[in-house]
Image (cartoon, rainbow, N blue to C red; front, side, top):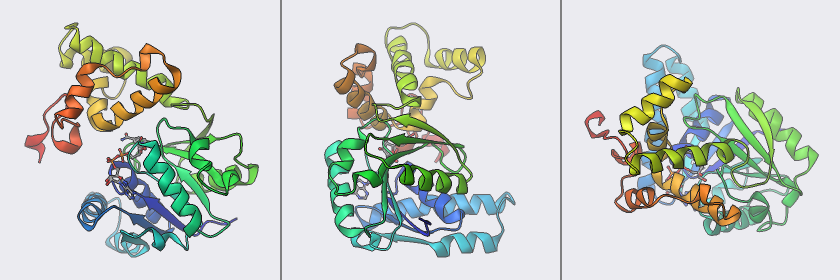
Length: 286
Ligand code: NAD
């Protein structure tokens, strides 16, 4: 099956990046949000990204116009009725994701593939909300999507070979490299990353060192591009919290339990870069 039109559900941090990359790679793309205000905010992030690329000489003005002409925003799921592939990128809550999958199953053409960008949740549970489990898989992109090369494809026990082949080809057409994982919480990358990030929060909370020294230790000692607390601010502390909760719920292993400090920061609305404050303060950056 050839993919021509792509749908993206959710135009937050990840959905906006996924929609941008799809439109940039020549696909007709439709992206949705829950209301006009959030849709305009998400589309605004894409426009700002593209304008930045034009300014830096990475894109021409004509290319920018071409990308924007292929990109359509909506607040109605019915606008996904012509899509060959829909990638869900809403918040990390299973009940909401299952609802979206069930509605997409009703709306999308029979041949359409439905993918989730979930970081940790069970793909087969979302597939079970549809009548097309063989055409459901995980497509786990990384943040920021236009920059990060990897897509982790998640294959359930029901995903067909044909679906895997089509989505592998599609992911490569976006300029991405793929890895394939089984449908277990956290897949490959987050299974290893999440305990590490939670340990960094515990170390800070226990007074081991300052946040700057914890980050510098990992950056300079292990040659990571950024330290774990800076990375948490990038990911979004709410998203990290939901992922940790989902993984703890599944494995019941204390290494996945969200530390109280993380929960407190989420409750306070300190969600990282997206709200201007997390472990670090970004409000001066605007
Ligand atoms: P986000 O909070 O920035 O964006 C989620 C968006 O989804 C919000 O704008 C929200 O309004 C919207 N939304 C909620 N319900 C919706 C619906 N029914 N229809 C349309 N839009 C809806 O979160 P994010 O960081 O973009 O995460 C989205 C997904 O991607 C999550 O499953 C997360 O686990 C996963 N993910 C996140 C990262 C990361 O680094 N943040 C990386 C990989 C995967």
